[in-house]
Each structure stands twice: as structure tokens, then as C-alpha cells.
Image (cartoon, rainbow, N blue to C red):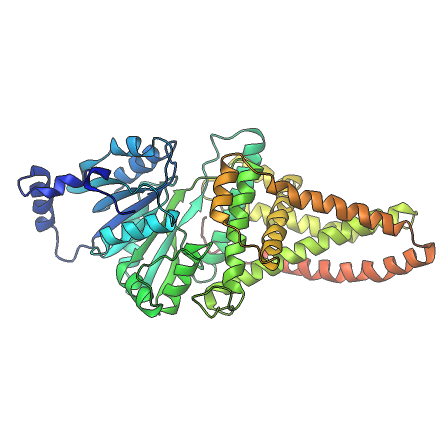
Length: 480
């Protein structure tokens, strides 16, 4: 629904040529160097009353202010608009003796069936005349020099279509189970960021949390894909799809070497499940040929190679864990288990690799280090992730038409129990296996163990070699 003038907080300042703020703004523009790039910032918001003030304060404290900031509020039921409106209007600050100016506008676009995608596209129409578009989520707090670093990097190379900041989560407000989940997500982000760093800083996903885009690259991606807007509403992962399109248009997609931002974390199992299933399902949708109505599918696209590796790695993690637990229980059930010391090696290398990841974090804490050293927390978090992995693939193969955006929002509100399904299924499978196992004769039990243990040994050995190679891979001074 198109907003009216009364919905645009701060917008009516532009309606009069006599407005002193506009005169001041134009004077500032006229005094700028001719080659100074312009950055338009858009912040899509849905029920961000708890965080939007921190987000705007961080943006207004940047060493390089965006030239204009648009807060796009959609479908909100809380006080996001009222809180954001306190920041509406012109802002000026002196940075190293240079006056910088920006102006904040708050737009309440009301009910919007396209949700975040609709808010992003509305924001694009407001800043498409700028050289660069800075996309910021309504719960992402940037480091003071984040915009400065992103601008320096994207201006330095005309081949770059977009650059993502290095993402983490501020762990300080969380305690108990929430602290465990946040620490796990920090480790997950750190490993993902480092993988991209070591691939020539090529970023598969320009995350919507805090990324800068060249508007010329957005226009090219729209033209190449016959789209009227940069983002489309038929993808679960609109940022991944846009990144893929920008790459296909001949531009580079990068992760910053220095720009950092703290994103909003999921502090409940239910919320984390909703978010990660949406991410995983959307990634599968891009991986699988011909699933989306407007694309032929690009399973071997360069931006999707790491996605394939991630999914294969998760499958192998599931296979080794389920097989080991099953075989161990089966062997103990009739006294056939024999301990071999080398089965401890994978655990040892996993701890070492987790610790290496923790030590690569710029703002690591004692929680991050203990999470890696104690092994059990990291292992429990892996089981949680496996639940997300299987839920996403099950949804995909079942051909369910589910609104995963709505499912995530429902989960974040504390509703729904889909996060329990993977664990219920696991319990039922274990019960079925136990029942079948005890129906077998001793000879059959011995035969099965004699065949399957070596298979597990080979798979585990390959995984261990992979961990050793990662362990000795140099991080080249990168911090995530």
C-alpha cells in the first residue's frame, strides 16, 4: 500500500523551498568535493522497538555519515515508528574538523504483503539516485568506522558490486540457555566469515544485516533478470538470490576486511529453529535446479559452491554421529564393544579446530573459548543445527508450501512447536532401531557390526583429515 504524506515522518520537510533545513542541506552538497560518493541508507523494520534506537544512534555516530537515512517500517504492531521518529530530521557533526550532514526520514508503509522485501524495494526507490545503497537491519548495531571502511573498499574497485560487513552478536545481555545459543551462533558466524575471508574475501551472501551495494550493480542485476525491483518476494533468502544475481552480472561480491556489525541473535530454541530453517530452506531452493518460477536454477553457480559444501558437511556430521551412537549402543547391548584409543582423535581435532575459530574472533570472550575447549557445548549446538538441517530438507522434499517468513515471526513471538519435531522423530527412530535390533540373532548382530564399524571408520577418517587440513590452514592475519 502506497504511503500518504502523513505517513512519512520528516518527509514534508522537502515540500517547501523555503525550508532552512533544505537550504542547509543543498549548501552542504554544493560544498562537497565533486568526486565524493553518495550513500543512501535504508533500514527495513518490523517490530524493532527494542533495537531501532541503538541502530540509529550507531549510524549517527559513524565516522562517515550516510548522506541520507530512510527507516522503512512495515506491518509493525509495536512502537517502532514512534521511537524512530525521535531521530527524524537533520543531523550534523564535525569529524576531524570536517562537517558531515545527514537527514533521517521515517516511513510507515503500513500493511505490506511483501514484508521485508517490500520495505527494501520501497527504500531502493528513495535512494536509487545515490552511488551506493547501504542496507541495515533494524536490529544491527555497527561499529563506529563500519560505513567508512565499506565506502573505502567499494570505491577502491569498480568491479565490486557489494560488500558485506563482518557479522557477530553482542553476547553481553544474555544469560543461561540464551547465552549458550548466542555463543553457538557467534561461533557459527565466525566460521562462516573466515571461510569467505580465505576464499579471496569472496562473499557468497551479501547479508541484509549490514551491506553496501553499488546502485549500478543493482540496476544491472534488475535488467539482466527482467525485474522491476532489486529484491523479489518469491525467495526465502532474498539476500542470497540478489548476491547471486550481482555475481552473474559480472560484479564481485566481497566481505569486508575491517567493517564490523553486531546483528540480532536468536535467544530461544524456537526462534533459532524458525530462522535457520528459513535460511536452510531458501538455500536449498537456490541449489536445486528449476524450483523457482522465475529461474532455471543455477546449482553450480560460483556463489553456491560453499552452500553445497555446507550441506554435504552437515550430512556427514549427521551420519557419523548417528552411526557412532547406534553402533556403540548396539555393541554394548551384548558385550561386543572393544575400545580403541584412536577413536578419541576426531574429538581432539574438533576441539582444536573450534578453539582456532574462537581465537580468530576479534572480540572473543571467555565464553567463546570455553565453548570450544569444553567440547560438549559445541557438540550440543551441532545437534541443534542438525535439527534445522533435517527440518529444512524434509520441508523441501515434502513439497510443502509454507510461508517460512511467517513461521519465523511466529517462532520469535514464542508460538509454535516445530522446533520439537526433529527431536521427537529422533526418539522414534531410536526406539524403532532398538526394537529391531533385539529381534536379531547374535550372528546377525555380529555380522552387522563387523560391516558397519569399518564403514564408519573410513568416513570418520576422511572427516578427521579434513579437520587437520583446516587446522593447519593459515588465517593470514584475518580476524572475524
